[in-house]
Image (cartoon, rainbow, N blue to C red):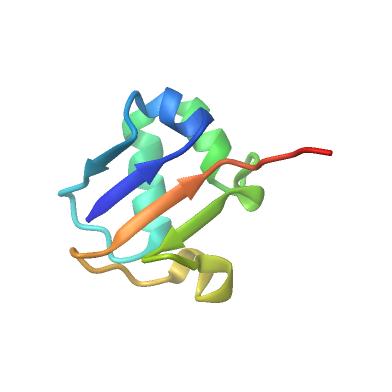
Length: 89
């Protein structure tokens, strides 16, 4: 599957996107695998033990909060896009 990173996550991963070839049955499994690959700073931004509850994760353009959240199933052809929390005023 293709994984795209934005803002802070792009800086942490050191890339805009990548083809993730390790199997991941769900969004939660993928995020844990990515956190393992990119370390504690990445984990803080994407998992619920940090800002993760505020991060936006899309699967094929659909927000996982409107699907099955971390239990959203994934397929090899999916595109996962991850945005860290954003603020403004």
